[in-house]
Length: 100
Image (cartoon, rainbow, N blue to C red; front, side, top):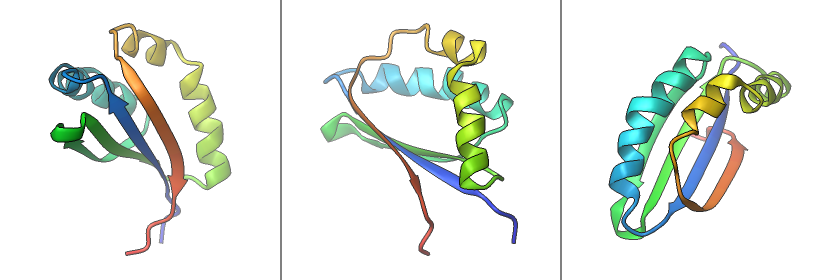
C-alpha cells in the first residue's frame, strides 16, 4: 500500500461568506493546490453554520508532508491564491489517520 498523509482543514467563515468562499475555493484553491501536487480528498459545506471542511493529501510520510506543506506555505502560488479576500473566523488544521 502506498503511503499517504491526509490533512483535515476546518474553517469557520464570516456569516454570509460561504457562497463567495465556495466559488473561490472551487475556482482558485483547488486547481492551485492540485498543480502543487496535492490531492483534494473532499470538500464539505455546512451552510447553516457557515462552516467548510476539506482534506488534502500527499503520497508522502508525515515528515514528507510537513516538508512539502512548509514549501507550499512559503510559495508564490499560495500567496497569489490568497490574494482574494477570504474572511475566516477560525481555522483548525490537523494531520489525521484514516480509520475506515
